[in-house]
Image 1 (cartoon, rainbow, N blue to C red):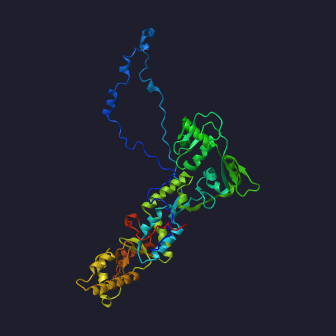
Image 2: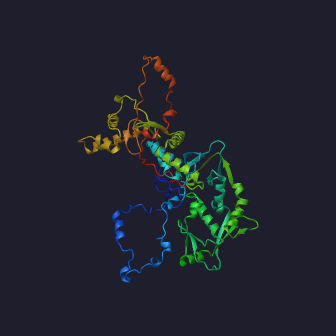
Image 3: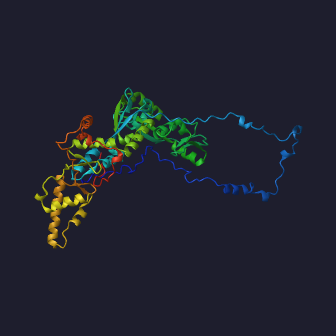
Length: 498
């Protein structure tokens, strides 16, 4: 196989998607098994006052010495008074309605070209099922086509930017996404802050210090942090619950040192030069000047797989995630895309091994020559592969080796076997799969004899039943009739430099 151009590691080859930018928090209660009765009893046996023996007997409560009013005992609530209170109604959180969008995964052009070149470089057969899984493993290897129902629109930021089903979602995250395209950010230090600050707010998820809650920069920083890092994972109200107030003097000093940093936004290619000293003013300028020309809408859009995993629209991202999980289990649609593209470049798609789809640069065909007119070596290869489907080259050479032959004769027989096998594979009479196993092409079912006339019933059935075509035979089968096969020899299709 052709050696691919090395590139940086893309993503871990795991079947689970990292939809969130931040790592998921570990479950602190994963190993919690509850408390047994003995443990509770042991705690109840301990003296509640550890200093009881040192300080002597406890003094009587002064409340016991007070005279009781009208001879009445201590106050008590009437039975059931606590239960008479109206219980707060528990309202379960309603899950958002799934977005009505059709998601289809396509092989990315550069990755597909890389795979085609490798398939054409050797007469090997590859499982289309395994190739489909290979493309779905990494987002760098596929594109995502999104199609909305008639009358509905998708919104995109520029030609290759983020996509959302709601225009307002893009408007809220557009500045963070496109800031570097229109502004140059400069960070300088100002004089130390003056004032007595006793506490600061901190994000539990990221550890970011946001400053005192009454500081003028608190709300803009809080909103910006949510939009850029956590908007896909939770609502703003849920994120606000992740903010804690810290009174540690060291943490307060750390925030004061960070607050000295002054960020200035310089507009690129502006005449005269224009700058803003805070993010709010820069975003306002962005919304008025650039945003209207960036937003576009369409009923159907195609985006890169990497972009599909970090969209600001949570409903759209969840729809893509669910479609990816389903396609990974049964990649029938990706197989259809691959089969059509492979056939267009002249590769052969055929069925083998319980109807599985395979692709090869060689057209598989049954050996139709008279066995008497070919060499004994070719006949021996065909007979052995027919009796032992799945045999590999090494096993074939060992089983067809001439016993008790001289060294020179054994070497000549070995070379003859290699040449004959090479010819059979390149002519399509023997299929060599990418896992080095060998097999013969499947013979076509024998045709019905011409003298046998079908009955009227069978004629009607045949009339209603469409004949199988090449397109139908190349159609991707369901998951029950397919098996994943290791694609040995195919290098990472995403390893080609973009």
